[in-house]
Length: 544
Image (cartoon, rainbow, N blue to C red; front, side, top):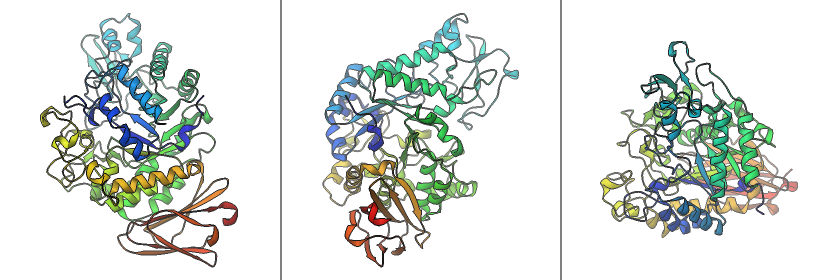
């Protein structure tokens, strides 16, 4: 029996199979290629993989336009390959989460093809149609600069269908019990293949008004999902991608009966912005606006994901500042009116010290940390690629052709490798950094190891302190028996920060970081060079 609650102190690593490692030289990553790299993943310290969609798909939206929920895209392998991956990962103590997209399908999905061809088919009601579009519910599209609205005409059906995303991604009618049964069957199938849970894509849009009458669903939809996965596998977990307003986020946990984890878009926007502009106020604001979810679930914290860096949770003035501050002057990185299609290294100007410090801060926060593959070595984006593909280039393993990702020709790779910049695979790759104890990769390995030595951090109580400097963040995390103090210097200059918390010298030990400190008169002074960080740990009873 596997202990429930494993996700609470997990370290999640997210990757796209088709851009991670190509085992057969066809230019696409595949499951056998991923299996070959499990040593690397284990050495990094990862305890959970989150795999982005690998299902059959026309790939008009990077696989989030699913054409068949029950198989694997033939360029990436077979269900048997997936099963082998989960078996090999489990042997190493690594869980596997898959991405499931239930808000919509591809127009190529068999359900939609039968729905459009036969209005009397049960599949017709799997989707949302109207014959009177002028009278139908209207709302904004999630891609407002790519789509005119949420209704598109289908010539075969002679009706309009509803879609919150691209026009080739019709929304599923999740109010239909038959659709819910299909969703449950899909989850049971992949759990049976070895999955340990799922990231549920677009959880927020799943609950928004849909269709001709703007019908809505409540949290019962997700409570039902949780009951299904728990009945099938008692340790299975659900992670919500729910980029809703802060005051609504606790709703998705369903008082502990729905999602186990939720991606923390609020902290993401504020943390990366604060570290980038050398100012701690965004972290204080994030702490003020986030709801208390203790006892209901846990945050999944991250610095970057595989989409744009979404800034909508920042105050409007900060959003406008971030638009100009972080992107190139030509505006080519700004997308959807809400964010930059840049990687973390681009946002931080290729500064590995700043990237390492940001990861230290991420891992020093309560919650479950999530790392985007490639960020651990400082990979950059390719703005020549369309839309969000700029941050979805292949993993850079070494300085050989195609960065060791594939032996295929560059033109045959799913996405080309980054070339011609400081981020090209000749300059940024795993092999070079593995042999360098001072590399970004080595530092992030140390950060992950420090977090794993202190799993109680995941559900501790967070307290932010006044550091005396706007560009130094000092915070404390209290657990049942242990207290931690963390200091991070966002500045490009040396800082000393005096903290008037009672900290006994004899009981306090440094856990991580090059930053200095000394304790006197029951207070602690941090001595921090640019981008320095330090983790201190002590017995909570002595610190109170």
